[in-house]
Image (cartoon, rainbow, N blue to C red; front, side):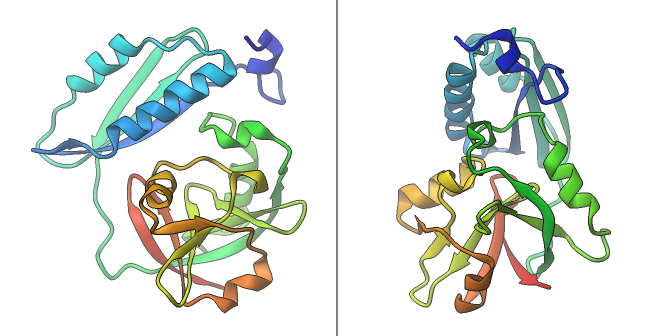
Length: 218
């Protein structure tokens, strides 16, 4: 099990694991088992207590008259914080404007593969541009490789329709939508540099909450 210091961020503060789910009336949670599998795996690697029965019980009580965004935060000791709010999907013709951040990710930081409350570098990247200038901001690593957005995975579409997404070794989150697309063969891993993006037919940002969103790189 990791030491207590390993469960603290760069400022010495403890951090938590996060999962953000979409809940739909009638069908329930979207990709629930994939989200929970990631939470189990991250808990095991980072030494968090994982109260499976309590988590499933709390999630089973979620109800709403419309779609919900449900956020679960798990502390190292197994404390659960669960919150739900109405979720409004993006219009079908939405295209996000995205920009490249000066802030960089460290490809050697394996904790980037886990979804945690350690958001400092992502918050710094987001703060580089106003909401009018960018809907999402993409981070590179120290090698100039594309990693991810502040809240999304990056996908580039080849001419054959297959999506390319950066490997975890570049320094990024093991996204749930990303995992599903890789498992289905609709996406493959490939190191992508900033200069490579113009070679692809289309670009997307995506996450399990919102799905794939076409983007325009500015």
